[in-house]
Image (cartoon, rainbow, N blue to C red; front, side, top):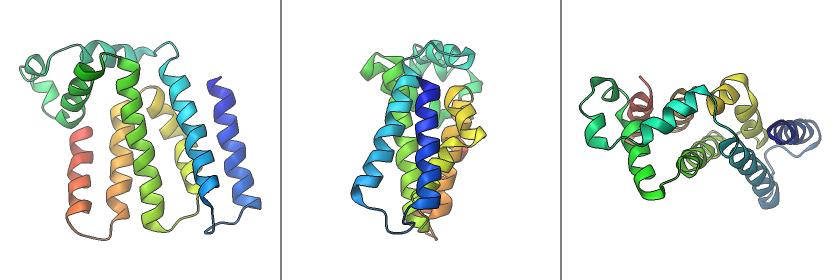
Length: 172
């Protein structure tokens, strides 16, 4: 199912790139892509976890106070503290990861809008190797990359620097 949704996103992106109206995408086109990608994330999160996600899931169960006793968690506190806090509310690792996936999707869509890029940019950004690998394994790096992309999409100001610093604390 993951592969099928990946292929749907790929075909949507290619068809929109070559046959669409770049720069004049409509409300429906944005929502279709958003919902297909969201379905891809849901299927990914509720599939059996990969090696890295077993580690992430086990770490989510640690209370923040226990994390703060280990220096390893200080360098990437934005991910670990927020993830642990979300997990304490949701009590579900897949739902916690889905909330982060939703954030990454928002960051990519917002960066696209800020940069004035066509909608198929979102499909490309989600389908390149680093994103696919990030969604399935190196999650903190993926979230940091999405946040960095968002930071770079702002011309200047507090938002740019705020997201830039957040990206650094997602993954050093």
